[in-house]
Amino acid sequence: MDYETIIYGLDEGVLTITLNRPDVLNAFNRKMTEEIQDALKKAERDAAVRCIVFTGAGRAFSSGEDLKARLAEGASDFGSTLKQRYNPIILKMRNIEKPVLGAINGVAAGAGCSLALACDMRIASEKARFIEVFVRVGLVPDSGSSFFLPRLVGLGWALEMAFLGDEVGAEEALRLGLVNRVVPSEELESATREFALRLAKGPTKAIGLAKRAINRALSMDLEQLLEYEVHMQEIAGASADYQEGLAAFGEKRAPNFAGS
Image (cartoon, rainbow, N blue to C red; front, side, top):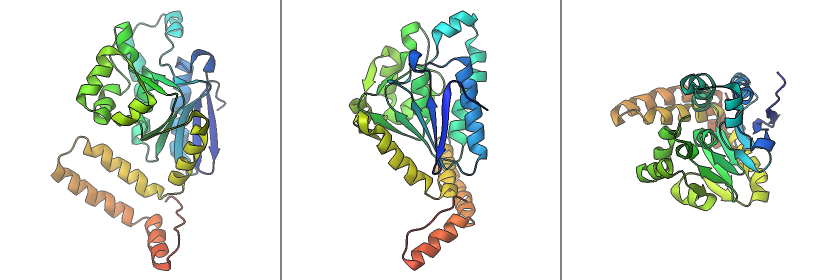
């Protein structure tokens, strides 16, 4: 499938999905959300994809829903918009058993902020800004923001961001735990590449199982999680990557994980 609103680039196990509507700050229209869904399904099936990076073209990550396009379409049913266009993206990002990294190059607002929060980890340019902008137009956080935000920054800050819609700059985002690291804007691409390659060369099976377990931990008690970890470890222990890791340890060399 040829994409019109995103760029799909795979290199050395790292798939970069670039939101590519820079003239409207990479705002989401129907076509873009459909293409992101398709790209994630393709990435899930492709064993060559071992890490996924989301970033934006131009000076923004994403400004959220394209309200002008929405008005032009005459769309008024938010429920079906979320169920059909946004929720499948967020669920796939969380359930895909490959690491998903956000390279936040500029403003991430509304659903753009939600997409950033749904990534497993985030590297931010010093120019990045996060805005739960929904309240400015009389709406509530959606596309997973109300789930991820309090888990990342705590209840008080999550409520302040949701209630006021103020922007949070990169350094403040780092202090709050909203991002993993902040780098100069000119270093974002190289820093992301270095991080993503490290993930792509890791034991993909084990990383995917760890992601599954940590996702489940958000809704389990300790006893349930301990049992679930047993199950995950049994699967990981039967993987080729574990055999390679064990051999590399014994031979005192760096492991060469195949991701299976």
